[in-house]
Length: 458
Ligand SMILES: Cc1cc2nc3c(=O)[nH]c(=O)nc-3n(C[C@H](O)[C@H](O)[C@H](O)COP(=O)(O)OP(=O)(O)OC[C@H]3O[C@@H](n4cnc5c(N)ncnc54)[C@H](O)[C@@H]3O)c2cc1C
Image 1 (cartoon, helix red, strand yellow):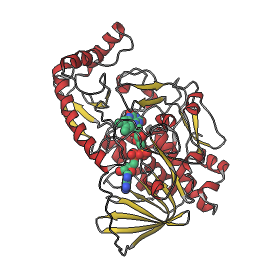
Image 2: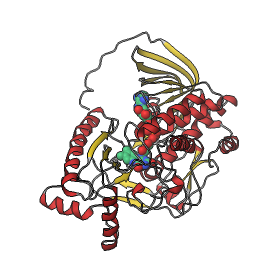
Image 3: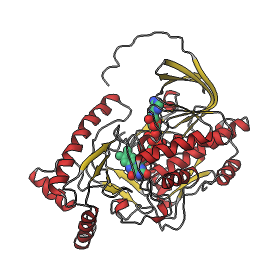
Image 4: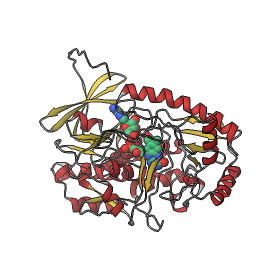
């Protein structure tokens, strides 16, 4: 950012809006789970969200389906608890397909085998309502259209959170803060150490704007894929068409195939194919450039679908995300840093609070390809220490920015573990208040037992 060459100093009187036990900042997957868990476990809880609905990247960013919440063989569920409650609510609304029924290599998982069984296809509007109802039912208070601005520190403790809403600046005074902003904004402002992207060069995975298309001839798309996977095993959807079109100049995007996921409504698919590189999702200039570039790519795609892709000749653009989806920014450094070997070897920990089996899924920060590498075990665990940032005493982090390196996060970043770490953080925050200790000192056995009693798998 070139603007930080000149500063002014000004002072304001900022009114105290609320004093609470727990403030959860960010109402995405992790925040929804954290706020619900904290409130259900008896803490007065406030959930701050800048948009007017919940779900974050999975609703505002339209990212989906939820990746696997099962072991690779599909026999055991690894993420349940509040995550499954959200799915049950959506299924009851006719807005999702239960992951116990979705198979590897199916249209629900974009015809991908590895790591793409037991996914959860869902409607964005069903998810907005299911998450809203779950948080409201928990007793947590939601403050929509409210942005986190800054923290006020008392030594290593966050004493107040500065927010901005329609009435101006305000203060929240929480005993414990849970950072579920997706980017670790609160932890960074509070002085917790972090890494950006890859350790060696700070590069981050590319961003992608999702879109939903309608009027797809589902049967033709599936038939094309089934025919081609016999002729060219390992080839992805429309890969040969994209390759040929690149040679003639009809395809200019970075991706080498179409990555599209069938939705619960016939004829509707979610498209994960646009891509913009060199975007730091914490930099407003980069985010603006990413929106401009990716929205242009959306219409290039629509034209390409109609002119080149069997089954997509008559597609209509139904919706685009309100924001580009950001895969990676800060990795907040906690008391343990989950790494790629932990994931691949299926490492377990005494303070394990979540389980996951999703592969390491890296979208190359410098090129079109990536790395999808399956784990060599049933599952790995995420230790509680990954939620406890260094150097700040009353803060927990959940969701995408938990303490993991580039490779560890490339697995743990998907939506099911974000719910699981959110549920663990909310439960731990409430326990820390009951035990009158800092979140770092929470009795781990009691935390694990409470999570288990409340449906989570630990
Ligand atoms: C392009 C892309 C494709 C992906 N594909 C899949 C997939 O197919 N399946 C899957 O399971 N996972 C996928 N993922 C990963 C997954 O979607 C995310 O990692 C996950 O949703 C992050 O959840 P979260 O709760 O940590 O953060 P988010 O969902 O990003 O939530 C953060 C919340 O904080 C709010 N917020 C942020 N800053 C502020 C502020 N200053 N003040 C107030 N509120 C604020 C945001 O509005 C948002 O609601 C993908 C990610 C991307 C980007």
